[in-house]
Length: 94
Image 1: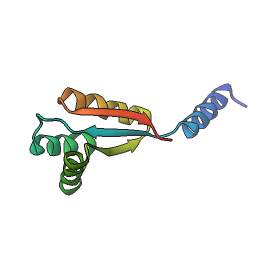
Image 2: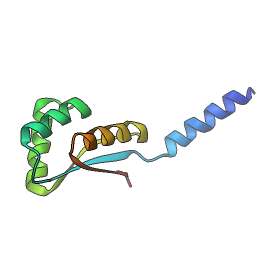
Image 3: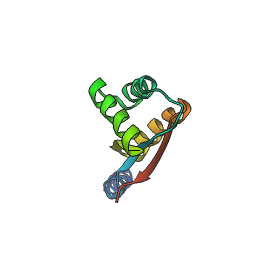
């Protein structure tokens, strides 16, 4: 067996065993609904209705899980939302 194949299989198994990550948006007192919706559409690929619903959930409940995915995908979205001055967190799903 090719050593590269073994490394690829190990990487595939590692990826399968890694839990998905959750990106959570938190409420704040300075971002507008329009800005939050725009950011969720652009960064998280939400449709307008989904982004609007998330913004209302955050407003009413203090936070909302907006995306679940692999580490690299969620980390990239996390950093983009942070740079847009939104309050977000990410954690491994249980």
